[in-house]
Image 1 (cartoon, one colour):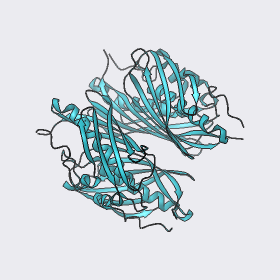
Image 2 (cartoon, rainbow over the protein chains, first blue to last red):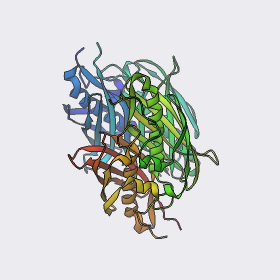
Image 3 (cartoon, each protein chain N blue to C red):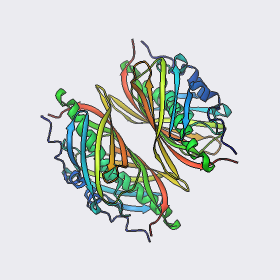
Image 4 (tube, one colour):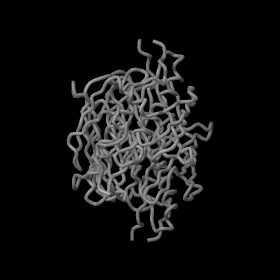
Length: 134
Length: 134
Length: 134
Length: 134
């Protein structure tokens, strides 16, 4: 199997609204326009939005990094810290590798509020390099 | 403000498909019917689905636990481990507190594949008790 | 190389005072007698003591589990939560696997205050199975 | 009570060999000279050494940051990633805050091998600000 279109997932992924821009094996960027669709019952952006965007950005970068070897990267652990509540506005996404080994990778993803440059959430994803199916 | 309907969030939360059953301050249960809507571009359930359901279940339980004090609980950290890939089927959700302090709570959430009882993902959420808005 | 004596490390490890009892590939137990030697400058047991004991117990169990294959297990990530401060007394250690795959393992370690059975700290260690040196 | 000497703990802490240099509320640096005293039974530096140094550096900085308020900071969670094995040599320590709130702080600590500048381990510590005893 060749690698799939990295932005083409199901309805849940689409509901995050994450729009990747740069997608390389050492850097993934993009943005999310946040609003009421992303809210918890308490009226702020759901922590799962941040965790999901972090997981996506790290998975894209880590998978691009090993595509030449016929591999992709699957998340083993996602560890997300929520630093500031947010209700709406643009969120800038930046994912970079901390470690890229033969078997494992570790990516750090920072989510920044576009209007003031403050970090809203940050997470790290541990991934395992595995063969592409098929 | 009184506590909101704990299952009433935005479109993103609805896209998880998490249906809570029991919702108390020491135990939250529920289920998710997983399928292609939850998939990554690689055709398995997105790790963000698990992280989001874990965040939701822990937040509900922790918020119920402190509602009497005019508080709710906001996630500070979500730490999710992905143990087995899954493509479809029912996922059973069980959230229980590890610690319930005056300021902080720690909840453990286990996601189990209904058809064979195997744990698919597990996570823990650290939450801070804060005053209900308004 | 054959597997080393699993309790024979350097002075730092000895300073933890961790005394393993049962050491199998699916369960490690033991105890630590805590006191002033384990204190921070603020007079309570240093969080590093808990993290180190958790790392040791998980590493022993995970390494025993794969010794037959000529492997041992190296820690990739240690995630420890500190639930209650403690100044002295016996701490009971229990380590059990959450996942034991071909490449990776995940162990959960619970540290319980012997005098009242309360959990003082808990941690999980992600380990990678690698060939024994030599 | 006034704040204690931040480098004056028990025998366990001394066994890490961590020597702080700069100690402010927004930055802690220092070094550790690693060798056989820090080894696991498998002959590499014990992961607990890294976790403990990370815990110490973060606790010092976070406590200095709130000392003016009559508080110090206690670790709630320590999350350490082990990136490269090391057997001996100098380790440089750098701790910096990610978040410093009224109740909680989050510090990131990076441990770098002095001879080639590579990151050996990194961790983050979540801490709670609490009143100084007495």
